[in-house]
Length: 449
Ligand SMILES: [Zn+2]
Image (cartoon, rainbow, N blue to C red; front, top):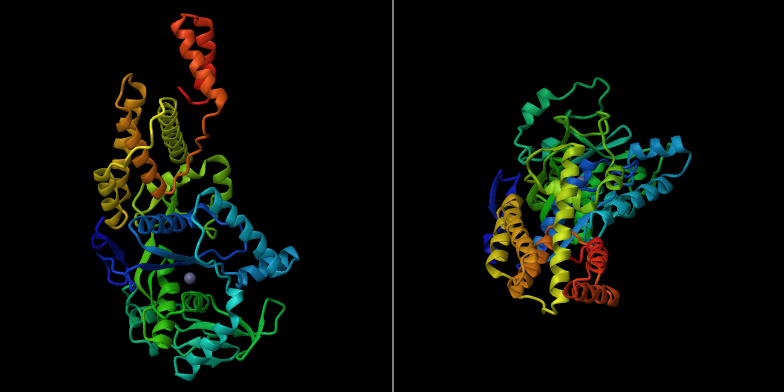
């Protein structure tokens, strides 16, 4: 596929536009990860699956992708939860990182290039904030260091809002120590019993918006990367504030493309912890396979909202099982006929990749996959079918489903399976129906025939 066909929706520019990475061979992606104070809900994994799909697609067309997502392990919510549980912040975040990673594994998410924790970049955050103070973009007031939003002429460009409207709409806080209600905290000077660090700024801890921008700069070792993403709700203020700091410190907008993933809804309302309508990802992944959850997310374009229901996930489970069974039967039919691995069907692969190149148009990509699935079924059931064609279909279907991140469990045939199959054929030739029925059951239970 011609890489110049790739187009992505960039929230910053407000349109779908050609994707041209800074380095012609490499793509950097950073998406905001979870604050690890609790089990995450299913909606948190929609960006994860989306950026995993994007990574797999970009790698398939020849890019080396460095995909990074962080853990926010410093946050007031973490302090509160660890005090309640009477354990350290570190113990708490380690526990929930492990729980999160179990879900990543079940969802077949590719290993990331880096998975930075905010707590490991404190000195870099402190010196970043010091630089902002030195150049007039930040100021200390009381025990907090704030970003001076009025110093950033580009503020509001990402979320398409202007500063004066934001100011007039801002909540009036009579106790505020801020120069402007939009100013946001970069560092809290504190000696309380929450997690804190001794730095050039004094004892305290960083604000969330600074954590991400510093981790992006540090992990990629550059001020501007290709793609920064996250859930739609992070666009404002989190990403706007990341950009403001990057503009003030590095004179760049941090990422050339800003991608935002739509909400997961439940009964038409955004799933969120604060609304109390969360469905935990770990629970969903005990009831449904990782393939099913991926297919559920892939059933809707990543920027559109998607509605969670158990029925939708049941339907995705059935779809995943149908694909697996079909692939299994075809694979075994080819193996039992000693047919060599097929050549890929280039036209179908091209159609599939071009669909994904169009801002991850998964609906069109799935149309190609389903067309192949149907033909695989037809050729598997039919006697005297073109087995080379079937082998090519299996090869291409596997290539495409791998880009979609689906993982199928197809155990290799054992010697016993092969013997049962030849005994079954012999029994049929000999009209030994009792034996052929018995072997048919054994073979069909394993999906071999
Ligand atoms: Zn972030």
